[in-house]
Image 1 (tube, rainbow, N blue to C red):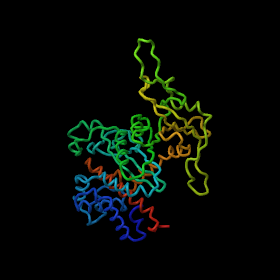
Image 2 (cartoon, rainbow, N blue to C red):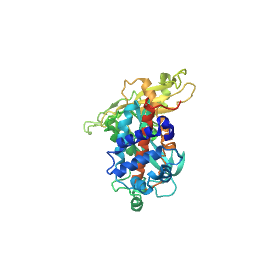
Image 3 (cartoon, helix red, strand yellow):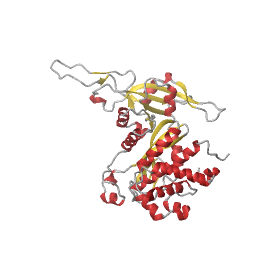
Image 4 (cartoon, rainbow, N blue to C red):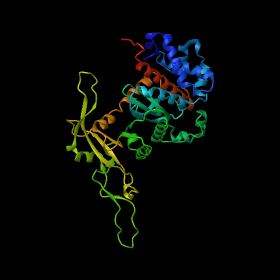
Length: 411
């Protein structure tokens, strides 16, 4: 929905709403009046019609109101805080969308050359292959009435971290050091968890679900999660017991670490043994009023995971849900998830959350296709964060426009 599509109640009225929203989400982040002016202009540029949302074509579309040098300075160099913009947008939009989950994911930003911060030949799900790109980690709130990004982090490969000249040219702050994508995601989740917004279970793909450290840290921080895992991931079956073995002799050292009474097994092997426990679960309302609700067959089991089980455990490993979708007519299951939701969680909720992550793709589609998330052409570390924060603000404004029944829309 571009600016022209929102103008059914008049371009002046829409612009007034946009400027009021811009002031609301930018004021605490900027430190000079000219930055607020440029922020308003940049948001307008992102929302105006136009295939390319990089700086030069946006300035051309904005006409005489925008000055290229001033906007470029605002975007790439000015020291306003993008995280405060993302927070303000989240605290304004999240209460309006009936949040059901947070989604942790990453996306590729295809790039030419070697100078954009973090760029290298690496695998990108966006490209579906290895290509020259940046990778951005993000967290999004997903609700019944829309979505909103809760944070962005640019992944900086180790060769970038260890190259002082490339860091200098891209203006990468000295305190920025190498962190894995799960580490970046954990920081974004923890930061958003301190905001005045509703927490919700965190969803993520296998790259995050198989990181046991991430799962443990989220559990310790009182975040619930439902993560995808590979069928070869190993867990301990529900009947496994952990105990301290007896000493081999009176003279032997007393043993203190708990040891399992059996080895872990791949989740697909465990689910095969539980095939008779399959149950049909409705996980989503029908897309149309006259259609049947969406349902499938699932298996649910309480399991325990322990990475280095050969050395025993200092404490009883915590239980997690193993969730498996095994649709009728399929010889094998199609998907597996692991979750720390409470043991009394209804199957319908577990299945619904497991199958909800697809909504993130719609979010990325709008952020990139309509708002130019991946159109930033600058080579500034701070510029990338400024651009993603302003795209978040534009996305938030569109979400609120859709939710307000007092703003007429085309039939």
